[in-house]
Amino acid sequence: MWRIVMLVGLGLIVVGILVGVGFAWQARQLKARIEAARSWTEVPAVIQSARLQKVGKTSSAPSLSYTYSVAGKTYTGKRLQFGGISMTRLEAEEVLAAYPVGSTTTVRYDPQRHDFAVLRLAADSRGFLIAGIGIGLAFVLAGIVVAVSG
Image (tube, rainbow, N blue to C red; front, side, top):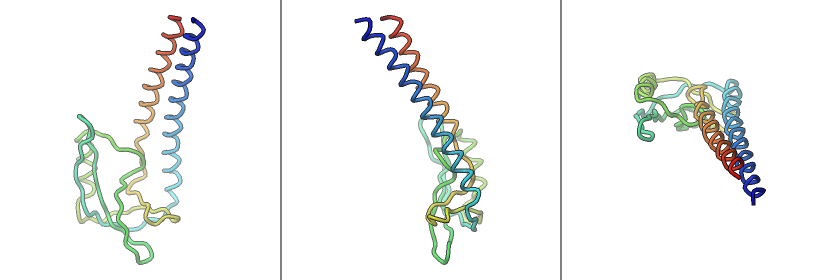
């Protein structure tokens, strides 16, 4: 019986490590997308809408839409940056203030997919790292407790 408990504990530890590595890999992928987007073509864009969006109980996110043209075709984009966006209300309001409705700014679009554009070269990879550490550590600690108690 103690072998089964020990194996369950070790299994939880392995899952915790894999979760942590997976979230860290996702954060790295976001940074790689930013680097790739540095070579994308820049074009003017017009901000069509800008509003504050509530995320959970304490966080906010700016929600923007913009139009831009490539080879005579107009596209609508909504991507501010890569990855999720979660910030304080004040931070979100500061972002919105930088992109007032009707203003012209610059976006970068993917030369392979003209409908895929981004306003700024940034990513919120911090959330992936925090989640990976938190969830991974919880599994590792649970695995240690299970393994030791067996």
